[in-house]
Length: 63
Image (cartoon, rainbow, N blue to C red; front, side, top):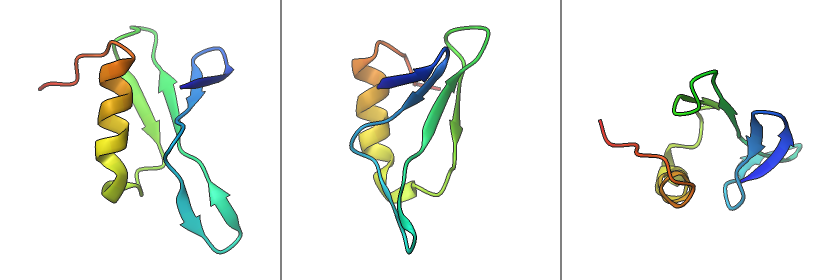
């Protein structure tokens, strides 16, 4: 993940096909650093990429 500002990251490898160009999703790290918010949930087909990113970043995403 690439930090844009404190607690906001882009996710490399995930893009959204948009007629205006590429749109990138962002992850926001909540006050509890284990809580994440995905901004723009329209990336269902690419969720495995997101899952790998989070696992590699050290987050336990199991429910």
